[in-house]
Amino acid sequence: MALTIAVCVKPVPVTTRLDAITGRLDRSVAHRLNSVDENAVEAALTLRESDPGSEVVVVSVAPAEFAESLRPALAMGADRAIVVSAPELEGADLLGVSAALATTLSGLHPDLVVFGSWSSDGYGAMLWSAVGERLGFAVASRAVDFVLDADRLTVTRQIEQGTQVVEVALPAVLALSGEVNTPRYPSFKDVIAGKKKPIELLTMTDCTVTAGTMVLSVEPSPARTRGIVIEDDGQAHVQLIDFLTQRGIV
Image (cartoon, rainbow, N blue to C red; front, side, top):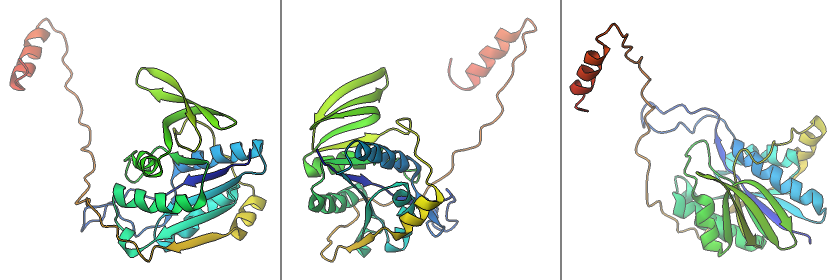
């Protein structure tokens, strides 16, 4: 069964440097394809290899100037890419981005929509769920393995207690863990071929998305300090009690 497989990806800053003025992530630097999204592309390509009639389409909501960041996915083997942009989408939150993605995906009529589980610039890990809800698709997340059989997908999910196996019917949304596979490394020939593949720029002229939330600032985690070492000279218990008492623990 030939499939249309959409892979939702995101260009992310190459560094996690914060803007000294705004306190937010500096997005003026160069961008690259989110690393876990490469796992999603690899998964889609693996499925296509088992059915050469299938198509892999990379889709991203991003400013038009970041379109070239999707070239690595095309070099890996994706057939084409679509970048959705609009001034209203810059800084859009989960609701806005999921609405734009769902609208675009609806026009593709995908059998399967694949996501990396998170992005390195936000770690929200919720976009795939919101898109699945808007499309009315079944959703399987945190996938570490999957098997497609006709129109059903058997997915092994990583959960806190171990693993869980679920079955979903297509069309579906699949969110992958970074441990699911090892992305292929494009050859020089693949890179050249990827540069010739089309990236379609879609402008949502009727976009009415507004951000419901806004990131005000981001602060780095405090540096870890050296712990206190208590040597047992026969009075260690006294030092330990004093330590706990000073911190109001006992």
